[in-house]
Image 1 (tube, rainbow, N blue to C red):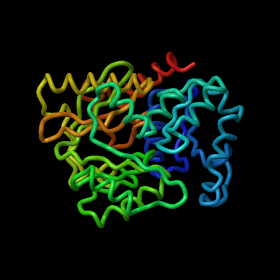
Image 2 (image 1 turned 90 degrees about the vertical axis):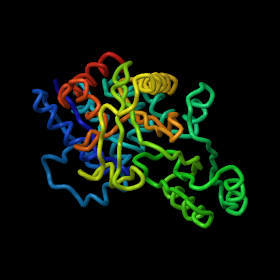
Image 3 (image 1 turned 30 degrees about the vertical axis):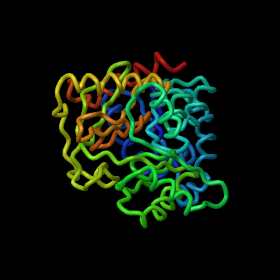
Length: 331
């Protein structure tokens, strides 16, 4: 099968995407597929010819992405495997173009990606449908910000510590654990570097868990024990910085409850194919669901491959299953 693997992009998760893309391409080659691996900020001739400085290309990366996707060589592929994380690669833009072109691809539709990427909409859906989630507020920047009013609102609703994060980012990019009032304004400014919307969320003391969905089933729950106090970017993508327990050391009833909530959320968010739900298990032994990732990482430290391995699926077999589902789900 001729498969195009898309990686890189212009989002804050570019480096992770490059790692995912290379891992995927190598595994699919081992599976016997004809692979074209493309960094979406570069032209179609990127493999054959010398290219201009990457920094210049990134400035026009999203425009170049459109040119790539409509190139006859891409459109002649049997399947598009996107390893893009964040930004236009995961918010439904790429998926919408691929759907319009009639391409077969991995993961959720444009609708599912757009809904899941928006943390505000996701939170509203969780609350409306009884999926436990930490208390939250959101604010949107329209011109200037009345910091005094925002800080007053936050401190009346939340106790410290609390979480401030962008409304449309992943990999904990732009996220701050705020422990005292004077840290609120810098945390807001950090979140606003990435989005015009930011969330304030109750901090749930407890354990870091994640659940992958493959097709319509939840895989084993994974517990993450980061060497830092939070499962941050470094702990996620640096080998040896986190310990992973698969399956998580929780009882069967709680495991099933978490898996059922996850599959329900996956469907409510209009996701399909595969994804990964992040959550906290509070000190009260109750789960609190945070967000759904529609194109989770496929690096050497990524969590979906670890969960798949626990049910006997190798990385190569996992990718074949994702492709099989994609060929059936995405038209």
